[in-house]
Length: 309
Image (tube, rainbow, N blue to C red; front, side, top):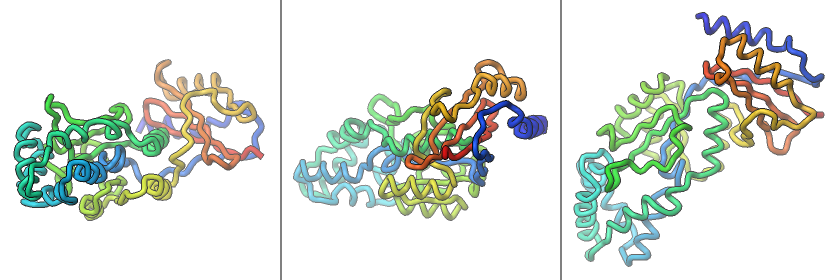
């Protein structure tokens, strides 16, 4: 209650600061969503489906062999047991390789496929999605990874992401559960501290998207990455591109008195010197409209926006 009153007082008094004479200022609308949950493969990093196709072509393996092996055997098949952390990498390579070889009618070097899954393009997060995450977090949204993932030979999960960009990371190989099991979705929601209707979920597999939607989440099927980010923008009602971190990056005509504003934030919200950061970013790349967003460790977010003309 105290924090809410402090935030309300801060919002009502913010404009008493002496700021440049600008045409218009308004508080940004607050989204009804509190969190965005991302699948990893095919959403934050490249899809392994294309990788499997290339592997089959390069190794003269009949197309679709790996996909058939993944789908065969239900919940107790080798692939799903690997995703749930029930078997290690060595056992997986032996068992899944044997299964694929039986389907193909010839030896399939699954060890090299597993190596491909953890190297090259698979280690490089998709820039468009990373920027979307930065923008979402700058608006106070929580972010999470919910991935069907596996343990590498060294016992660590493959997770080529900046962990600091996510409030929660849930991996099937650590939880003993995998999507589309409703329990792993609930686990992620509980750790985020949000309800299903307060979360948006992105995944590249229809089955996982349907499971999230059935629980009450707004679910987005990811195909084209750029198009999916645009769809997420529409759902959240905020821009997810043009993020520029750090104070003092605004054009001269739009600069606010950052020192005065920072001092006010620290005093009004009782923050330490390290508790406040101010970010300026461009709302729309081709439009003369900017926002200056002020955020602090207590998760209060206030936005001032104006046209330049």
